[in-house]
Length: 312
Image (cartoon, rainbow, N blue to C red):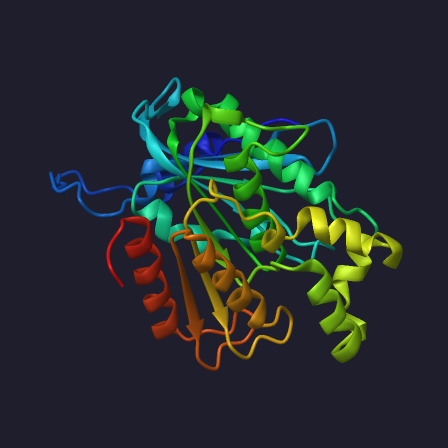
């Protein structure tokens, strides 16, 4: 694997447009000193960085800095930035980090760095996705200085199966209760943002078996019904809540037929009983990622209010 940086594409595009659209000699450009807004040119993307030896163990890093021109083009910002680790969904059967840009743009706009891992998926691969996700978090700890990750302000997020990975890895990282890749106390998980993730694997499998057997991704991931109890016991977030569990906010549509809304309701009942800071944002009429523009705006208002410690 090799990093595909955007610098060469930027250079080519610049030269092309300079040739096609020459600026009139007398035209003057105004330089603004207002740096409070979001400017897309302040971040760069490092693609397909390996965090393990398998082909699916790669990640993308969206990091902040400055384009400085030739010969090096990009200067990495040495200032620490709050950092989001975002896991894509796909029922542990597929999906890709290449499809998550809409979920991470609001964080980049606020000056966050973002890490988006791929992980091993497919039938009978449980619990490899969890192991890979833990190794990706460990990679973030190893590379915090290189990319300006604020190791004391790491937020983990994801949707659907990625929401499950965000929940379980955030809990395991905070508690240190995982053999294998584990960053230990080198990073702090400040919060988990769970988009309609699976919190009880066995319960989802039972729901799908009874109501939507053709969609039984939970059974496909585990691969063998005999393994269901052990996998669910070890890797269901509802079973791993501890005093070290980070604050959790969940977003879930109450008409979700892929991951039932009850998954998040039960999770947050347990969090409340355990005294863990938490918030459940239930979307009336919301399906599996079926939200309106107004609902998305309210969702992100609630997310950043939760992360910034504001009262809802």
